[in-house]
Image (cartoon, rainbow, N blue to C red; front, side):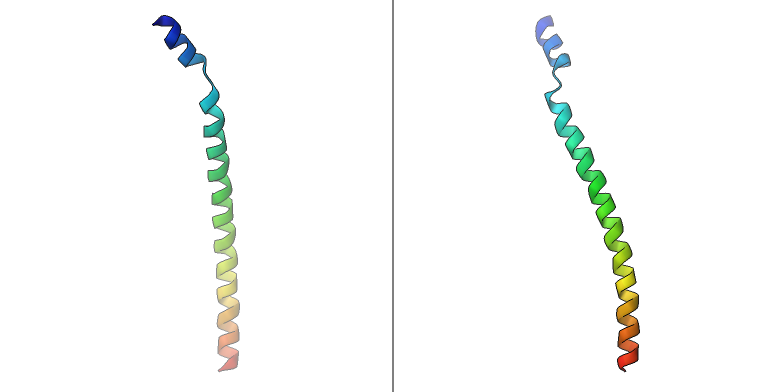
Length: 54
């Protein structure tokens, strides 16, 4: 039983999956922030174009 617990504590195979998940979360936050910034800029441009066409 002690050997089983020792092997479980020394196993690091799940650590890489967690690291990849954290990287994916970080990238998604950056992408969402960039898209929100571009979206509000585009909204301003389209509003300006819409008002000039009227």
